[in-house]
Amino acid sequence: MNRTGMSRYIPENILVYVAVDPNLRGKGLGGKIISKALELADGNTALHVEYDNPAKRLYERLGFKSKYAEMRFSKDG
Image (cartoon, rainbow, N blue to C red; front, side, top):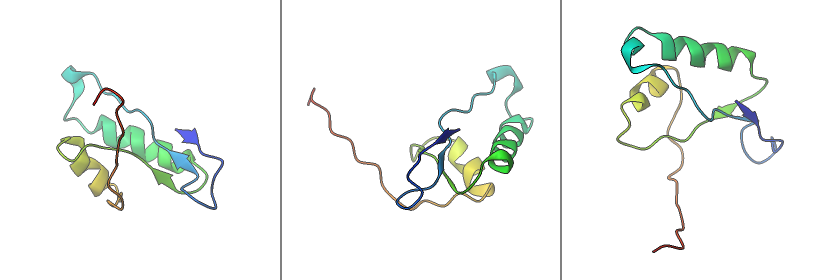
């Protein structure tokens, strides 16, 4: 979890990385990790997830809402 320092413009926190060992997935550990992080965070939280990421459903169940589309610029074309 990273604090943004920009609470007047974007959420106070960004959930950057969550990882669960592939052998332990499907047991609710990811949800517990995220729930605890949200509990400990002061203020609102955002995260970035690709539309086809299976974890997107977990984030939605935890209350995250899709608000913006991410846009990227690549100098490589």
